[in-house]
Length: 259
Length: 222
Image (tube, rainbow over all chains, first blue to last red):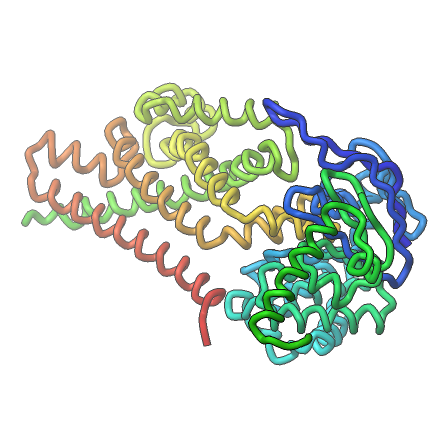
């Protein structure tokens, strides 16, 4: 379970102050797939990056599986991060390492023995369907394959939580779908908590169970995903749903039939 | 062609190679940690320390400001202290190493800064420490660029050795000045320059080959 309490973060630049997060409160149950949605610049990326302290929050607390991430010193944080997987929009794989070695990296960091690394990497390669690509280098893979490696790498050390920072935003719709299916499968198989941020309604609709809407650094709406589509309250979710509806009306008009 | 030509050129080449190899190794030993420190202590990097960064950068800039010939003169006492003499190839290695280390450090710093921040963030998110990131992410990811940078430094050091030859270091530079210039031996002058050209071309070719080989492994397409 992840609990965020009164989290705030302000970015100070030379000529302005930007309140990226303003008193955020969240509760994400174990095994949930939790979507955080919002327009660009709303603060959703800062929020997810605070969860493993890639971004240092100014105030507030973050508890993951009961452990207070915000109070940890450097060493404790390193250990905690080994149990928080993260995937990125730009994949961030290491070009100097093969697929196998990329997935092995977090295990090397955690100090696993070579035999264990080999077994675990092979197991996880099979799970993401890339066994035949073990010796390839990232540059030889397609976007979807790269993200599969990213997912494999994030899962290698058996994390409690998977953070996804716009993981499908750089992928085409077909590939997005297959990556979402993979995440869903992993969630069910491992009962892994997934927190993902997105600006794509399809992503929210397809795999998320619960959601929160971020607007100007605040959570303006949260609850089950169905509520977002059937009863949007905040201006962000209304405009998201309006965009969706206007497209559907257009489609209805062009195709001349009911959907 | 005079009979002493081959022998003179042979000795000169051997001395030059000796100075270049030894100076490169020593300046790498100083320049690599210095370059890494310059890169990682920068604002926003993994070991952010603006004051340390500023101090190192100032030091590097000061050493780099000296014209090389002047640096040799200033470091004469140091050469005498370490090597026991101020004349000869080994004595020249001291100023050569100290003079090129800051240059190498800057080259290494630039290469390491080219590594995409996303890769560093991903490593941080996996729980990697500073030293692990330097050793297993920054250096391997920047390796082709580092190889090219070191190649550039070797060529610069080769140029420095020729300058050092002017004040008693030996090597091909000294040969060109003592025989080619002062004794009007045009044959020696020409062969010295030709040898230096071949040497520099060879180093550049070798460096490019290694960098390409690394890139080919990483970016081959099946």
